[in-house]
Image 1 (cartoon, rainbow, N blue to C red):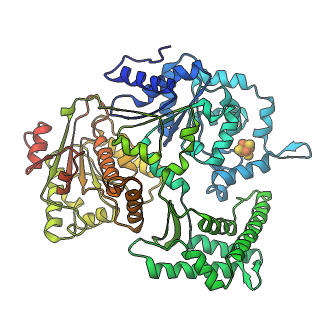
Image 2 (cartoon, rainbow, N blue to C red):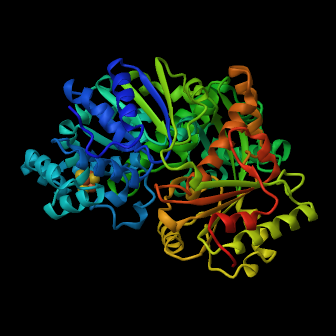
Length: 625
Ligand code: SF4
């Protein structure tokens, strides 16, 4: 059956049949598809034919809520009785029983799930949660028909459920077996505990699903993060506080929980003194256990026993909290889990670090191998990996250790002449050069002249927040006769969106943001919302201890650490930023890269320019500004 609901644009037929063939051969497709190729609709149309014929489900893995909505919109456009639902991760905000309790707002999915089980439990024949008990009388078929007709996004679905007095989360579990397409965040598939439950609710094993990985260039880093674990000073303080509140606990003759926390803090402080350079430092593999044994005067077996005791104490604390409808969280339990994982963790694929983040210091066991968490990609029937910036595809395939792979690169369909990419060789943002006075002054002049030359919506991508702050302090904003909006560290999502929307709707506004930040990667600028992007510096990763460890690891594994840890991520970030300019056939834009080192990046095609303002005016047909 032909599922494609629109008129075909160049390349779309080819893309759909490539995906369809890959699925039929039970292989894996790794695709870079440029702007305008319609990644969502083509991947759905390429997978649905086989899935429907063989009673399989398509699982669409997304990073953002807006992408989930896009999957629903495209499934609606396909029609043909396709049932598409979107499921979001569990939080207090998604539960009508918990969302008004501010103490529960920070609860993670596991904690909310434990609390939910208390609400659902029957006492004296009655359940504490009416939203749950009302499910018994709910006609699931009727809801399935309603979804087929109304295609609600997750927020609409929650509202509909609450109006009907039923729990959205529990009802969705009952609907999943009927769904053809399920849009979920990455953790549903890549976190083993969540995956087990998800598979159970769907009613089909992973081997009967086709996975579509959206924005796949993020997947290797995401999988590394999923396997990484850490424990910091703040959590240690909270563990000590928790122990005191509960009368402290003896773990071993002469050693209480607060004693252990005090020793952990001493070790963390010593690690910072000895190994920290700037923001991190690499620790010897057995550093923590050796220090614990020598400072406490105990053996490794005793440490293991103490961990077990802390887990039991933590379980007891969590159980009591749960019964009082409080977040079932124990910092003593987390400390034990961390020490055990650190001691038991594998040495080859992890680097042990001490890290300083603002005023918090922490131990981190960073996982360098994403393929350790990529098993679902092997267990599923077939997987489709798509992104606008995935090249070089061979590196992506080898990092994830994918097997039976077909690859495809498809250029964007919009006219190439609509994008002008320039660079200047007058400045360099190399670490040693960026603070040189002449270089810095030249950069300031270039940025001011480039922005002031044409009155179009302009985004400036800075290499870091601190560099942005420095240029602002040195008078950059005062020299621009324009409204300037700023992306700020730790900005809440609503604040970010409101700032972003006011920039998008401005005429000739200027936006200051950071390369690799939320704006450069995740947000769309349609039409004239963005016509010029100034990229200051090449976003090479910082030369941290973590990076050095990764480089060595990739040298050993693939023989080219610099390519995997520096060149590839840098080029991807730059392509993401430049890609913000052209989102439709009629968009036109100029990207200006302010760093001579771009000449050495062969995958970024930029034209050397000695008079950027004139070139801009010519491009935008400005006679004078
Ligand atoms: S069943 Fe639903 S509404 Fe009730 S507590 Fe659990 S998540 Fe909340």
